[in-house]
Image (cartoon, rainbow, N blue to C red; front, side, top):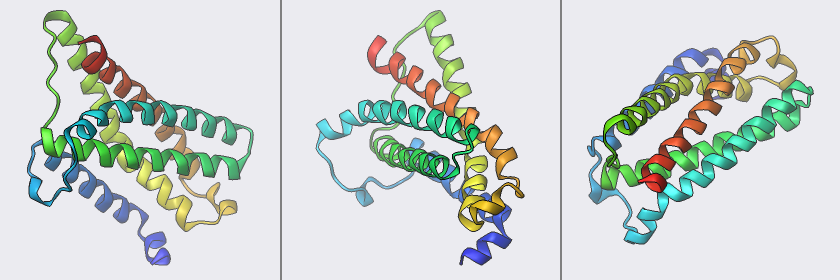
Length: 185
């Protein structure tokens, strides 16, 4: 399977991106039947945004450490940190999709200029998240299918230099959205 993926990284990236976006849209529009989702107590579902905020903060730290590691040519440390970042992102995403599939998106209660600012931040966050998805899949698939010594000869470094900062900003803006939704209002 690894060899097949290696020969088809762009195609696999496209498939994973489409499936991921379909899951997000399906959850946000509540198209996923609640009957197939595991039951959880209300207090646990209500805790998900707060847990995800902590996951996001940890992910921000991990991504920054991963960027520092690659600048220092600490390739193995970079690999471990970025894999940890992907793991945190997946945990975040599973929790987010579960909550949104059950409850729908959380409405913003503010009005006026604050609402306009919130919607602008949310839009940028969402655009960055959508743009990051194929970039992250692409560099992750390259890293999975190539020995570390060969990665420098692929598009991994070039795409990674674009993906990582966008991913970082997306996480930061996601936390700003959280603060506005759950702490300010």
